[in-house]
Image (cartoon, rainbow, N blue to C red; front, side):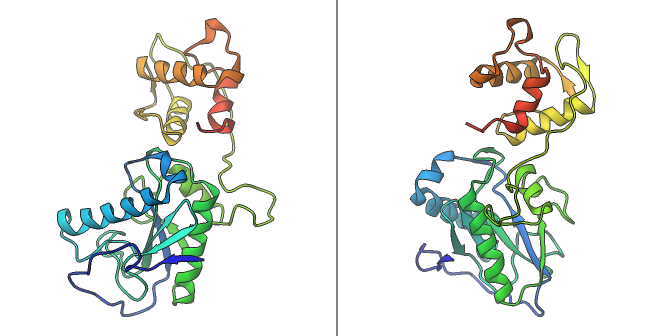
Length: 259
């Protein structure tokens, strides 16, 4: 693994240190919960600056003793040492920090929303590193035991599938998501409501679109659908279906590359 020590990313000194009294049960994975510029995939310096900004936020705004995470994983298959092993993190939620280490994926709720292979490798590297340092076998998302969207649907789905490396030989890709059944055309007007609308909205939000997941297919959902269809030239949408989620548009939301 490529471990970036604190002095290498020029971390600030912690204000204080709280040591763990017992080995944690495992690791909880987090994401940024804000937009992450996709350009960090091509520029590691942006990753360094992002980690430094997280520490600044945690120490100067949250008034924590240090960056809240045990470590941070970036798309270049590098792992930044945060608080480091043996120390209580601050990111899992009140009463939960002694149970699991906290690892931040440099992934957002918009922009870069689907973890690239290098980031998944870095997360597995971080998990293996912390296991060597005494962590248990559990791998969970921040949302497990704490009410939050973190670490986002794509990354949480990867965790639920076993948090495997992209090339583990299992025959599947960790960032693949099964396509839910399509039942009907989603269109507006009139206002259409239902669980299938909510499912599609959640998927579009996971892809990086700014959409409210409320189960109501209204003007905003129609506009996002239209933009998505225009972006995906290979859909060949019938002009009468622009802005409507037909079967090909529905399936593309899960199978088409995120650009």
